Image 1 (cartoon, one colour):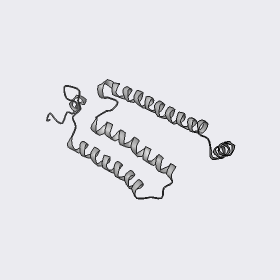
Image 2 (tube, one colour; image 1 turned 180 degrees about the horizontal axis):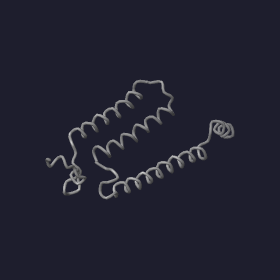
Image 3 (spheres, one colour; image 1 turned 90 degrees about the horizontal axis):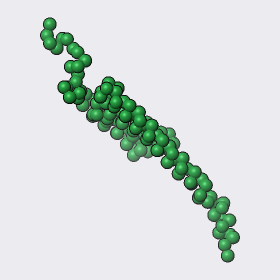
Image 4 (cartoon, one colour; image 1 turned 180 degrees about the vertical axis):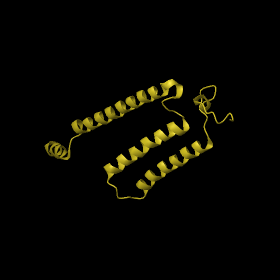
Amino acid sequence: MSDHAHHDHDDDFLDTGIPHVSRKEYLTGFVLSVVLTAIPFALVMGGSGVATPLLVLLLLAFAAVQVVVHMVYFLHMNAKSEGGWNALALIFTVVLVVIVLSGSLWVMHHLNTNMMPGAHEMQEIIRNTP
């Protein structure tokens, strides 16, 4: 029986804890990244006729998948690397990003709603100025 027939989990990692990565994995990540970039680009530039809110949701979905592809194929992050600390750091980062983005959108929406006069109010202001 050869040495390669007995495949141990520790064989997947170098002594420093860095995973062995094949050229096939890098090429898979590259192809997925190109496809996940080309499809949204074509949707936006090609005038696909998709409604704007749906298009924005599609672009966000493609962006989220693209982030996962980069993390898995290029940063080699998974639940087992670094004793699970990478996964914990990822969860913490995602929670913070969601809080910051949703809070920013909420604040901007309410500022727009409560601070900007509408067309009707602007006409009243214009009529009432001497």
